[in-house]
Image 1 (cartoon, rainbow, N blue to C red):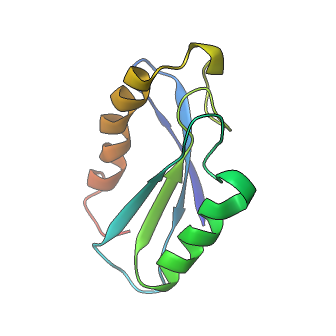
Image 2 (image 1 turned 45 degrees about the vertical axis):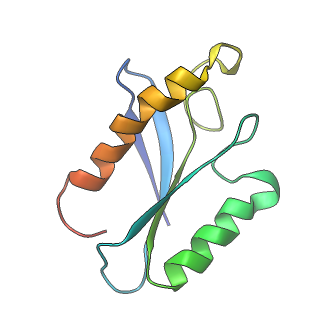
Length: 101
C-alpha cells in the first residue's frame, strides 16, 4: 500500500491509497466510498476488497472524498456535485505518470 495526497481543482488536499499487485499491470479499479464513511468503508471493507483485488492482479485506488477521512474540507458542506468535480483530479493519478502502477 502507498498513501498519496493530491489536490482537488479548488486546491483542497485529498488522500488516497494505492494497493499494487505483485506484477505490473495496466488494469486498475477505483473504490469510491459512500456518504458518512471514508476510504476504508464500514468495518474496513474497502481495505479487505482492495487487498483481494490486488492479489488478483489489479491495481486498486481507494480515496477519501473532500471532507472525509484524511482529505481536507468541511463534511457539512460537501455535495454530490463536489464529489463528481473531484473525479477528474482523481483520474490524473492514473495518467501521470503514464506507467503502469
